[in-house]
Image (tube, rainbow, N blue to C red; front, side, top):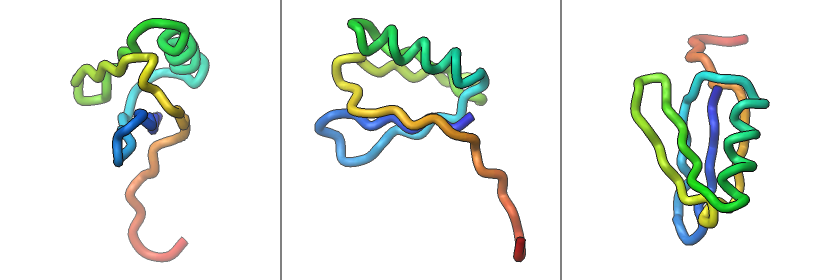
Length: 71
């Protein structure tokens, strides 16, 4: 699942491809915004940490698969 995180005072958003359900990610984001750190592990095993007080927005969606040609 693709997670886009907007961070305050940052020009670009952070895009992380994670495994898990929307409910799991939503629970982590809610906990972080209430005074914690958002901790996500991407599909390659890298760990991403974002301070909850710096999160501007979070967008959850499905990762787009590479397609070639016309649909």
